[in-house]
Image (cartoon, rainbow, N blue to C red; front, top):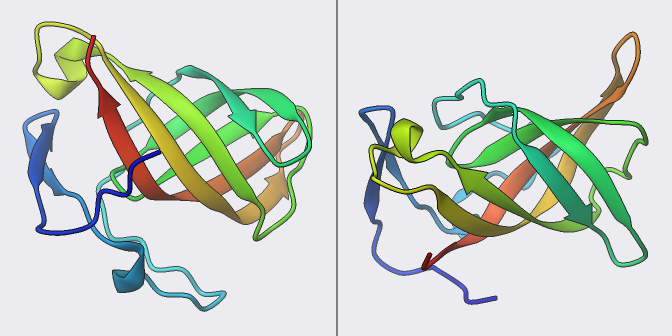
Length: 129
């Protein structure tokens, strides 16, 4: 997966500007800072770790992170890969956009029925459709 560091680029999500950012600009402490607007999107996703794959559903998505609802918890600090098919109307584009993401788990908690796993998006790549 390509690293997308370099000059900040502005994208628009539901008419709100969002900027790509380098992982070096993000806090590395246990107290993560939210730095982007979150949008409630329920998108199916397959999360890949070093050892297995998990099915999940996004609860909300931002330019810097995502919250997943899933049947199994993940380890905090674990590296993950996943792809999101962002709806065109949400992005203001004529077609849906596939985004490959690499991130890490920063929080895991239990809701009444499922694990909620929060992860950063440290790298992403828009895939031509």
